[in-house]
Image: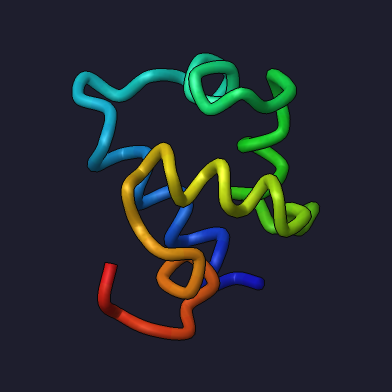
Length: 72
């Protein structure tokens, strides 16, 4: 889970220049305002449909987010 949390944080920081808050990014993805924050801290694991939404937003695979591959 730590690997996924780190990947999510890195994706947000690289994708949103200037860096948008986690709350704003969550809303842009279509998530609850604090959802991304909980995922990045490793407090919660996103459901499969949520994981797909995040992957689509960042244009990466779900396997990349989960740390199963280094190919985006």
